[in-house]
Image (cartoon, rainbow, N blue to C red; front, side, top):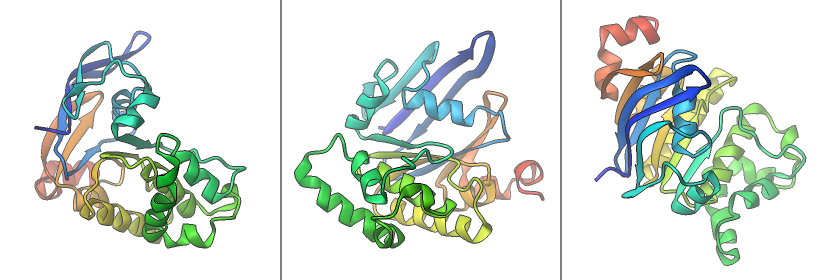
Length: 235
């Protein structure tokens, strides 16, 4: 059974029909990516899954339960965490304080172990744990946003444009970290404009255009597709 199953969801912004009957699933242990141009509906889809936006119809099932009407903060307790577009860290707090905020749903006696795990994944954060988060570089802030989400011990980690605004060498580093997290057993739903990087590590992908899924396949299949190459890979 899929860990996350989205069936025929429709989302509106006033009179604008932003998501038009999207259906997809994420199986336990997979990396699944949603790719598409700006305005295709990728971020809206993630925000709908995470409870920040309500769908007008359809079903969203996580770990066998219907979550379409569950409040966003309660979904974190269920094991679903999102790293938002633009990082949205707490700028005036230290790195470690940001990470501790990510563990607000967890028992106090587990926080030190979670911090150790995050610092193993992101050694740079341990080096800067007392530094004010707003003074970090863009790449470090992305690592912090990911680390903060990991503090909630998610079963599904949703990443929204993790490479946005980063230098190419940092993009490569972020995707290596995502791949490492996946190999450690974390299921990942990835929204990304860098289709080449996303499909290179994804088990499966879905291509969105103007609120609809138009193509799906394995990461390898989509990388080899002439249509995908022409539209998203510069080929």
